[in-house]
Structure formats: C-alpha cells, structure tokens
Image (cartoon, rainbow, N blue to C red; front, side, top):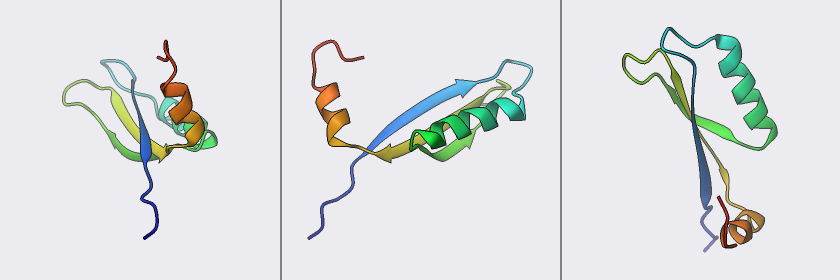
Length: 73
C-alpha cells in the first residue's frame, strides 16, 4: 500500500477593513506558489473586507525535523 501524503498548512489574512487589492492577493499567491504552496481556499470573513488564504504543500522530512527542534516557532 502506498504511503499516504501528509500535508502542512499555511493561513494568512490580508487587507484592510475597506477591502483588499487584487494585486496584494496575487502577490501573496505568487510568492507562496514559488515556495511550493497550493491555495486550497480563499475567502472573505464576513464584514471584514479582508481576504483569508489557506494553502497546503506536502510535509517534508526537513520540515518535520525543524519542527521537532526546541524553540521552533
């Protein structure tokens, strides 16, 4: 049986009360894409004018090791 992929997730809310510029959303998505992140959800919390982006990428052994070190944030 093949090993099941494990994921790490990233969440960021951008923008201001009066709205979020498309360029800011695009810049965040492009930067994250270069780091291997894939957006899985983009939504606007009700009444906030902001945009929340949820992304995922496969969890690597290097990330697992870094997270197991004391003081990892």
